[in-house]
Length: 383
Image 1: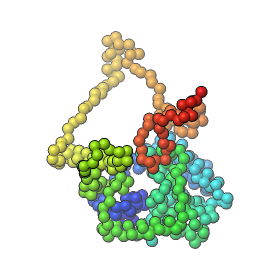
Image 2: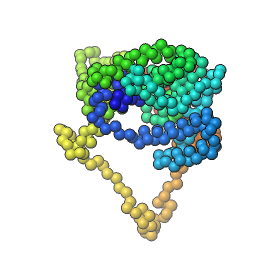
Image 3: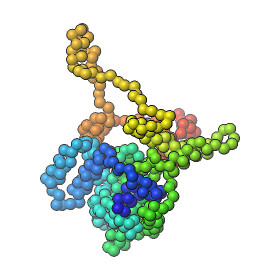
Image 4: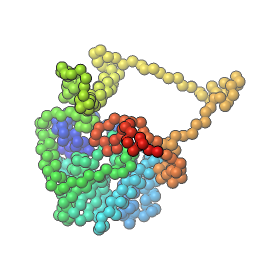
């Protein structure tokens, strides 16, 4: 029960907001199509890493196992390229050590001394000399996941340290996240065993609060993102109403410092309103009354009942066939998905250019390089 409540994948939520654990019990945990797709990509990645390290996995066995995975409903050819990037990252790390590291794949780790009943499965663990390296593969493309102080992987590291500290003199912990659909290189963070164990003690306290139904609600952007109770959580609602409508007499023009603060505070307000709208619509469609609101049919669209017959009729009436069809090339992204990332890069990579993206406002913690429209003196006097 404790493990089901305090899973490592939701650690960012229950560490920050312990009461959310019991609150979520009344909501069904439904696995999304994205999660199922990610699970399949993980299976492919695991198979490839095992092929890398297990001499007993012959090419024949590997091919047969891969064929079974390719036959699954959610399989897409682009999974091959993305999982290759994960395997290549592991290879780079293996070769970076002076001595051949110990490597475990899909290793079950137990951190129950910090979280009652707590255990999980680490995608990959490397150990060499004094370094414990936990590597995680993320297939999602919606939200970038940072390795720095990542609670899920720090829990895995605690479990791995407990299992291997009697065999290795570990003093450094390295955590890496490979999320190839969002970033080209793996994200890596390093810490000491001392800091990791301090984290473990903090987790122990938060886990006890969560299980005993104690602690304070602490709504926030990261902990609310995947919380099953987020649409109906009173603490989140009250916090966002306060952020959205709190006013105080101040100078008529806001300063840049205030702009940054308002944007940060308003991030979850916007998400909360969207979640609230989705919830209210679902309730209205279920026949319930949301005072002041109702569900209506949006603007519809038209479609052929029999397109082939309609086109034949138009042609018979004198409309040239060439006017009824368009021949358009597939987009670069669709072609890459069709042929696979590696084949695409090998065959036509030289014909691809990278166009600059539209300027986008992001939090300062984002790892991308900041840009401006300011022309430097060197550029101004060039030529």
